[in-house]
Structures are given as C-alpha cells and as structure tokens.
Image (cartoon, rainbow, N blue to C red):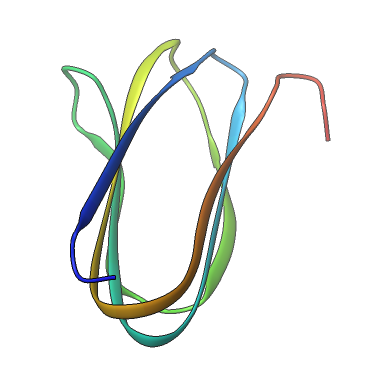
Amino acid sequence: MNREETADLNLTEGDRLRVSLSHTEGSVDVTVRLEGQETIYRGNGQQNADFVLEIAETGNYHISVWGYQAKGNVSFTRIPRGQE
C-alpha cells in the first residue's frame, strides 16, 4: 500500500472502535476524527497494534489510513454499546 484509504462510520455514544494494525513492511499513519471536530486518535508511523477507542459522542467518524510501502492488514471494528 502506497496511498491513502478513507471511510466514514456512524458511531453512537458508548460504542467502542477496535483498531487492529498488522504489517510486515513499511509504515502506516492513522487518524480517527468526529466530523467537524478535533481528531480523537492520531498514530504516525504505526507499527503492529491492537487497541480500543471509547466513543464519547454520537456522530459520523472519518477514518484515514496512509500507507508508505506497507504490506499487511488494517481493520476497524465497531463494538456496539453493551457488547464485549
């Protein structure tokens, strides 16, 4: 991957967003922000990671992933409020 990929995801207050990054080459930059608001997560030069973001406000979240000669997988999974 040597480009930017973006997606929008509607999330509700109390949801969680699992972010999983697993790559073997290159680097990855990730941002997650609520539309019209400040960025809630920014990771530059991310290596392998698996973490959960707590969603404090309902709205449309913009997710951007930039890959620089990267090979591997990136996933974002919505975990609805009340589910593990």
